[in-house]
Image 1 (spheres, helix red, strand yellow):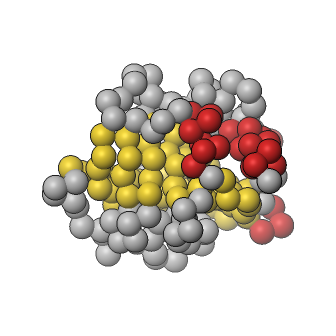
Image 2 (tube, rainbow, N blue to C red; image 1 turned 135 degrees about the vertical axis):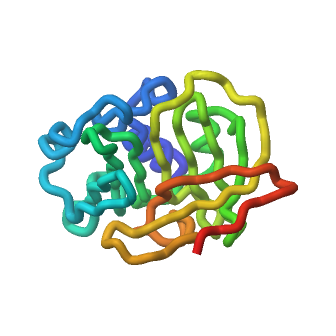
Length: 195
């Protein structure tokens, strides 16, 4: 089972150089445009406006290999800024650590206290479900610097691809609701979840 999880993670993360490349299935946050996403995967299941971003979501019959749902968050210029993947098969923490190392930042979703690991240098965010397994990953442009280990409290504001409001739900708690943002605050003064 562990080798199946590792193989699935390598497939999802983009191949053998996944720690350096934040690309997923050939789509790199900060570099790939909307036209490239549409050429690779076709028309999305849904196209939703979320603030200034447009989210292209593929799920159901159009789910991409290895994912229940994949979302490509585009800026106003049409460039992918974030990719969120809800995994078809949950992964364990050891698989993530074996790929990315110990998380430099740990946080949690304030409403549910579900774990979130942040890898800022690589632009990777890992969301754990209630059972303790990784259920979603988010890829964004990394900052290129190693962060000092830190623990924070987080608030995830989420909206499912169909536009229904589920503010405060974690990606792991609602498979159709990706994180649009995750805000961190010192553990002593956590921020309230948006409602």
